[in-house]
Length: 396
Image (cartoon, rainbow, N blue to C red):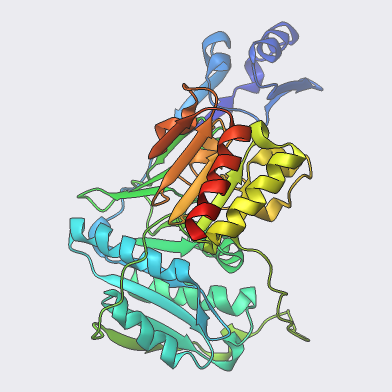
């Protein structure tokens, strides 16, 4: 890493005007005889090359960390009300896969109250140790005690990598703990790979899904990342438990919180397309009212649910909870039919792991056909009614 140093004694109005104009990000300003560079700077160094020595780029000295002092891949177990979120099991399977590269142990961090049964259940997913913080202070999620427990675990165990599910709880907790550790965090990873030197390669869509960015933290430990539900495959639990449970504790002064939970209410159950085994997804090419009705009928016949692409959610044709994609839900059904969907990268990233993908589109070159297992080129207004008729005929 480096920083820009401005030698103010070399700055004059003419040079300042030149530097203000040369900055493509508008990060340079000149006021009351002083040149300043704001946080909008992207370190393109045009000001250095055009600054006649008035602006210098200085490389900061970095101290290499000893990676051998950090060992293990940890999965944070999202457990609320005695129920473990299924993304935890998916991450356990991924952690075991990553650990096979470096021969590191796999840990699970579990925070809550009366969670002994949950800890026992996690031992059936191939983990080596389950570290348990069990106290009444963790009964309801409050950020301060949860962060204190998380940081205490890191300080004592020193895991090399930490995987957190991108749930409502995980999205709050992971950034706070990462900041306390002065480490970065890569959110919503779609691919995780491990190098022999224990560097975690965190791959996620960037620039609106137009590219896949590979992010590495070569000189920071632990390495934090979050991943959405249904991105990775959930392993089958073993018949016999493996590993062991390690009980952890914190002093009472670290369990205090400025948050007081007055009441908890169960959220009304709503449609969750991430849990559906069958999905009928429609895009702009099938947004007519008649086509939507046929899609709903088809989904009903198949015992599935209707989902949509981003444009239909933004147009308020469908609830945002039914949107598939990077800005919607990630799904992994056994069977999905995509009707009138071109297949933009943002959408494909949210459903390409489905077991069986059928796509219907009039454009034979539509990107959706690159991820589909079965491609149907034709008019959906003719194909879908015929498909409905065939299903009804077969059932009759």
